[in-house]
Length: 586
Image 1: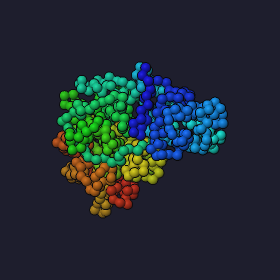
Image 2 (image 1 turned 180 degrees about the vertical axis):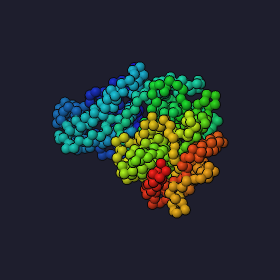
Image 3 (image 1 turned 60 degrees about the vertical axis):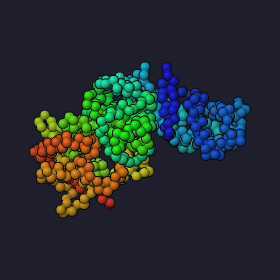
Image 4 (image 1 turned 120 degrees about the vertical axis):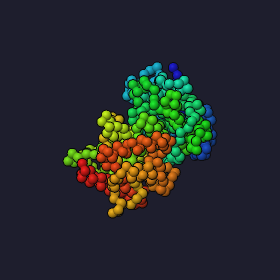
């Protein structure tokens, strides 16, 4: 059996667990993993010339004295500080200043908890994925209790007193997964190297989870390249994990490097994890997030690229592993770019927008598709609907929060599908207090910075893939003021008029990327359509003609989210106007 290992990579601690967890404080404190953290902490104190080092004779850290410190900790689990020197004479010096020793313990505990901490339960040879709750309980729960109780016992035996307030902080890991090797049925030998990477079967998180991403904005576009990134990628299998994501009806295997573990595992709040039946088939796409060095830099203006393998039908996306690409938006948007490219290949029209079914009082209902660029006010308008609540709305069902596709049902009627079961929202643009009401299941990213984000579940996978008849298709216009000549909601009267607005894709940038001011993007969707513009144009003409022939309300909604002072009232007034129109036309 392989031994469990503890790896420190930057601000991450990764425990690859292949055997039983330690069960006693003595096992914990005498183990190599604790010594690794203790040595790192001591080096951290030395770089700062910390006065906490004065717990050692003359402040000098020697291997032998650290050994004695560990023995002292082990004794302090069971005995009060006055007893320990009688058992181990070399412990006496550590009690020269009880307050200093207590501060040392407190700071060591905080140092451990400042890391992003992950447990990877290796299920090879022992199908832990068949008993996930028991596995998580015997790993992450047990470790949390053991570390916390060891810390408290040591501290109480140093001070001789008990705390008045006990704070049950997450002392173990913050995220745990069960993974195992899988022989994915890839259509070409070049992809078989990926089968060395463990595939995630279950995930456990402790929300609210706060993550500090290296970056808080996305730069550039996702460009198609003739070079297959798999030919350039070097995979060290124990540094990667695979999250097999169900993106709408597609299966995308996302391989992410340990440098981006916190981002890759956050997908559990956004995309449905594939089940065993899904993994019996070849995926529709592969995404390599964290490719080494600069090997992608010469493939395009920006090294965020994807490739269509025409021989196998696979799409392959790739993004470098450098810190500037450590933003969840890169991960999410590449997956959606792959989705959109495949949809166009299948004759379906992808959309960048939010789709929701609204059931009003009086049994009136409508399905709304709100299309527009990032920061145009799509999600914010949906939040405004939510806040309106019981007064107008009986039920609101999210079908797509950010991206989806349109197809025809058996009767030739346009129907919409989503991609994600979660939402990736700007905290600044949510209604006051809304995020706090959902902290119990949220992942919060860079809360103290511009473009702070929250990732949280918002719908079910069954709803995403069911297919919904569309009643309203509106372009989210966040840059124009509303007046008598420019109503909050304006209906278009021809296909050409509609296509002109949607094709132009105008929006006021909200700072979610490095662009600023008034920007234009083809159909407000840089995630695939510009790379297949001729194909998309044919689809757009075909589908927009169908919208009008089926008497779907096609127009634009002035959310005014990009106009200072209207960040909250703009989406709210747009939501109220739409409710009024639904009441008139339904």
